[in-house]
Length: 317
Image: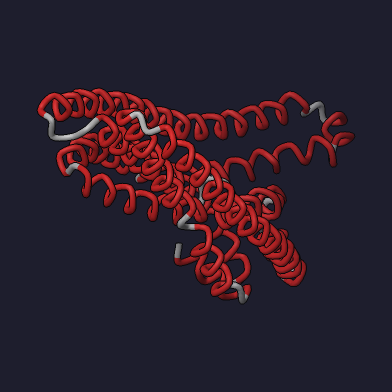
């Protein structure tokens, strides 16, 4: 994250970027609050057979929902235009820096490494700043998780405790299995991609020489080895992410069943009405959605931060 902050400062857009993040951050939290109150009000009207109030509630919340999504559309359209300009600046700056380097320094590295910097690294940096489930959604997930937890705490501290009892193990598993290994694997993947790209280049540029010395089989074997190395590294990343997703699904279902039983017990005791339990389940959904989004965004940021670091190092050469 520090590398991204320095890169944004170099681009002169850090304050504007933070401002746009703040504008986007409350959307999911407001939506969770709105849906939770809507469902509690609707089920309250059903329990009391108040059809007149039910119509007013539906119309009111329908207008509120339309205004919320209109606000979100305006913010994202402004953000998309801002991100497109930032990507264009980054491409021009990186190209200018590469062209200004001495020829000896350029030739001292693999040609595939420069291609990787121009394509994969810029794409990764752009995803980190603007892509789905990256930094913008990380800010959204934090606000949504905090507000949803507060709403659930006000209604039932017991259900909030049961919710987080299944969330903490998932966060621990994700930290130990995914976050500690993925950045190193991503770095190895980028290096393997550069080697693989460089091994393919002679097959095209030096095709006649390869045919003259009958070295086609040897060159193809080298390409195969580099491609296999790239595949192995990528498979390790996918396996760790898949294990994290599997544990998430199991803990998600376990938490749902636990809250279902706990909610049924509260209704039987007369502590809570059915409409209040529905409200708690909607708030729990906001906590889980925010936590899941946070974990996914953090994983993606760890991966894409490698690209940002490589771009920063290139610009500082």
